[in-house]
Length: 112
Image 1: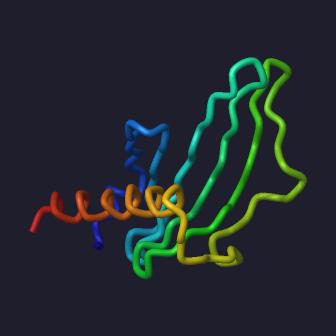
Image 2 (image 1 turned 180 degrees about the horizontal axis):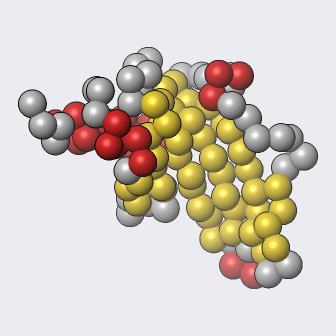
Protein backbone atom coordinates (compact mmCIF):
# COMPACT_ATOMS: atom_id res chain seq x y z
CA UNK A 1 0.00 0.00 0.00
CA UNK A 2 2.65 2.50 -0.95
CA UNK A 3 1.06 3.86 -4.09
CA UNK A 4 0.25 7.51 -3.30
CA UNK A 5 -1.89 7.88 -6.43
CA UNK A 6 -4.80 6.47 -4.47
CA UNK A 7 -4.57 9.15 -1.75
CA UNK A 8 -6.72 11.46 -3.85
CA UNK A 9 -9.01 8.83 -5.36
CA UNK A 10 -12.67 9.32 -4.46
CA UNK A 11 -15.30 6.66 -5.00
CA UNK A 12 -19.05 7.28 -4.86
CA UNK A 13 -21.11 4.27 -3.95
CA UNK A 14 -24.81 3.64 -4.52
CA UNK A 15 -25.77 4.24 -0.89
CA UNK A 16 -24.88 7.96 -0.79
CA UNK A 17 -21.35 7.42 0.56
CA UNK A 18 -18.28 9.19 -0.74
CA UNK A 19 -15.03 7.48 0.23
CA UNK A 20 -11.56 9.04 0.04
CA UNK A 21 -8.23 7.68 1.27
CA UNK A 22 -6.67 9.72 4.07
CA UNK A 23 -3.59 7.55 4.58
CA UNK A 24 -3.29 4.27 2.68
CA UNK A 25 -0.33 3.09 4.76
CA UNK A 26 -2.38 3.41 7.96
CA UNK A 27 -5.51 2.16 6.15
CA UNK A 28 -7.54 5.27 7.09
CA UNK A 29 -10.45 6.44 4.96
CA UNK A 30 -12.71 9.47 5.14
CA UNK A 31 -16.36 8.69 4.47
CA UNK A 32 -19.06 11.29 3.84
CA UNK A 33 -22.68 10.20 4.07
CA UNK A 34 -25.54 12.33 2.72
CA UNK A 35 -29.15 12.01 3.85
CA UNK A 36 -31.80 13.96 1.93
CA UNK A 37 -34.43 15.18 4.41
CA UNK A 38 -36.63 16.87 1.82
CA UNK A 39 -37.61 20.44 2.65
CA UNK A 40 -35.46 20.33 5.83
CA UNK A 41 -32.25 20.00 3.81
CA UNK A 42 -29.48 17.42 3.55
CA UNK A 43 -27.54 15.95 6.45
CA UNK A 44 -23.81 15.60 5.82
CA UNK A 45 -22.16 13.14 8.21
CA UNK A 46 -18.41 12.57 8.13
CA UNK A 47 -16.66 9.46 9.46
CA UNK A 48 -13.12 8.13 9.53
CA UNK A 49 -12.75 4.37 9.05
CA UNK A 50 -9.67 2.50 10.21
CA UNK A 51 -9.52 -0.62 8.04
CA UNK A 52 -6.56 -2.10 9.91
CA UNK A 53 -8.86 -2.91 12.84
CA UNK A 54 -12.33 -2.38 11.30
CA UNK A 55 -13.20 0.61 13.53
CA UNK A 56 -15.19 3.78 12.88
CA UNK A 57 -15.23 7.34 14.28
CA UNK A 58 -17.65 10.24 13.77
CA UNK A 59 -15.59 13.21 12.56
CA UNK A 60 -18.11 15.85 11.51
CA UNK A 61 -21.72 16.81 10.97
CA UNK A 62 -23.40 19.54 8.93
CA UNK A 63 -26.87 20.38 7.68
CA UNK A 64 -27.19 21.92 4.24
CA UNK A 65 -30.31 24.03 3.75
CA UNK A 66 -31.44 26.69 1.31
CA UNK A 67 -30.01 29.25 3.77
CA UNK A 68 -26.56 27.68 3.68
CA UNK A 69 -24.42 25.06 5.36
CA UNK A 70 -24.84 24.83 9.14
CA UNK A 71 -22.01 23.05 10.94
CA UNK A 72 -21.69 21.67 14.46
CA UNK A 73 -19.98 23.91 17.01
CA UNK A 74 -16.99 21.58 17.15
CA UNK A 75 -13.88 22.54 15.17
CA UNK A 76 -12.68 20.19 12.44
CA UNK A 77 -11.31 17.02 14.00
CA UNK A 78 -7.99 15.43 13.07
CA UNK A 79 -7.95 11.63 12.72
CA UNK A 80 -5.33 11.28 15.49
CA UNK A 81 -7.74 12.71 18.10
CA UNK A 82 -10.87 10.75 17.13
CA UNK A 83 -12.56 8.14 19.33
CA UNK A 84 -12.76 4.96 17.23
CA UNK A 85 -15.18 2.16 18.06
CA UNK A 86 -16.06 -1.25 16.64
CA UNK A 87 -19.48 -0.77 14.93
CA UNK A 88 -22.19 -3.11 16.21
CA UNK A 89 -25.25 -1.80 14.41
CA UNK A 90 -25.87 -2.65 10.76
CA UNK A 91 -25.51 0.95 9.54
CA UNK A 92 -22.03 1.41 11.02
CA UNK A 93 -20.93 -2.01 9.82
CA UNK A 94 -22.02 -1.16 6.25
CA UNK A 95 -20.04 2.10 6.31
CA UNK A 96 -16.93 0.30 7.55
CA UNK A 97 -17.34 -2.53 5.04
CA UNK A 98 -17.81 -0.08 2.13
CA UNK A 99 -14.63 1.82 2.98
CA UNK A 100 -12.54 -1.30 3.60
CA UNK A 101 -13.82 -3.02 0.45
CA UNK A 102 -12.61 0.10 -1.38
CA UNK A 103 -9.15 -0.52 0.14
CA UNK A 104 -9.17 -4.12 -1.10
CA UNK A 105 -10.19 -2.96 -4.59
CA UNK A 106 -7.42 -0.35 -4.67
CA UNK A 107 -4.80 -2.84 -3.46
CA UNK A 108 -5.79 -5.42 -6.05
CA UNK A 109 -5.37 -2.83 -8.82
CA UNK A 110 -1.95 -1.63 -7.65
CA UNK A 111 0.75 -2.39 -10.25
CA UNK A 112 3.22 -4.98 -9.05
